Length: 117
Length: 115
Figure 1: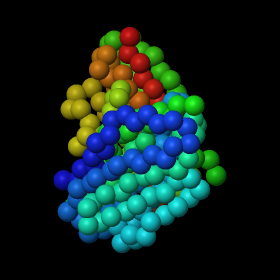
Figure 2: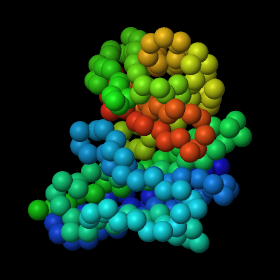
Figure 3: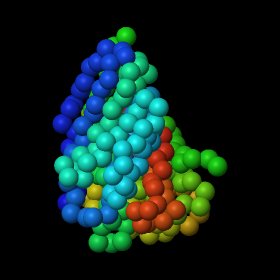
């Protein structure tokens, strides 16, 4: 069964600090997708990234970067020079095909990030 | 191209009442997924539907909960005789296909409060 672990429940950083959110996953499939979502206090889910299991290249998007390490089953997310607007709950998720031929998405329990001005 | 729509965004029900949550998928999407987010937790899969069919309801509580996705109109998640423990955010997602190459697009969620 697939599983996503976000061991950090809450993190507080001071504005402009860098912060890394950890995500470790378990799956028996060789083909799967990994995601990160942001959930601000308003409650909606904001899609950040989707990564195919065959693409281990790290990705950078502005102040955001992602480190995908298949060897350690990790997909960590780093925010550089954090800002107060980054304060939110961040979810890591894993999608894989099940025996019925459709995808199932498993979410981690989330990491609450507080950026202090 | 409008995204996934959910309404109402906030719903308050007294214990014992019924709650109906609606999800209109993106145009061209015939696959709908419902997830529940209990307070301070991540999203948990509830049910997966295609038009007029329930494909996987393994995450749905056995009683009081039902879902449908009719040929015309939105998908409905129905909770009968709500209890305080049903208070949660309910998200739906839609995709154009079932395979994992198809991304799920999430709606803004419906926040159900049971008083």
